[in-house]
Image (cartoon, rainbow, N blue to C red; front, side, top):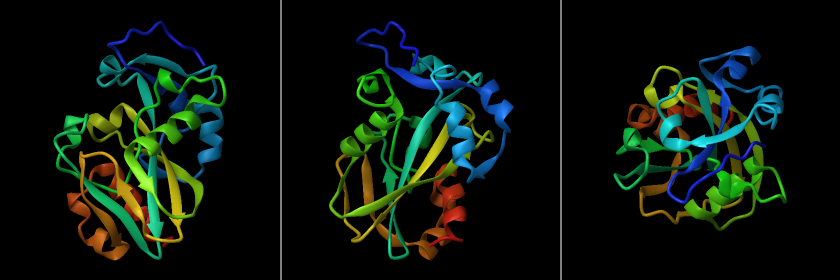
Length: 205
């Protein structure tokens, strides 16, 4: 992957040109055909690391974000984003997704930066105290909001044997497993990506 010259004060995050995404077939909402998109979107020929502050307002690029969901026996892990979380546009929103940006720290030479970043984000944000099975469910795109316009979510489902996930981050409050039908009833309190995922999960869990 292309790695820019970075400084100690500026975070550089993994992005792909929005034009490449559009060439593959733009969509609004959930796209289950992840493999067809990711083969191109994660190709080093198209990805680059660019300053996060600039990318947050530049719709010419999509920041690639792993969005991890934890389920167990029909219940899904959910939490509220406190004001301590970095993205102010999501403060006080409920969420079922755990994850974050892939950055130059994830260029280790031992694996793909995306896979390294996914592992790092999970280790930083939660304790997973149960065996699980992991699969990629699909992609989320939401061009209806300022946040969504500059991000592309890659949704990962972790199906746990036991409902044992604990936050590491103080910014994750009111956390715990909730039956999916209850979360669906509370849909309006959730960030848009979680609303899209709740709708998709309704036909699965």
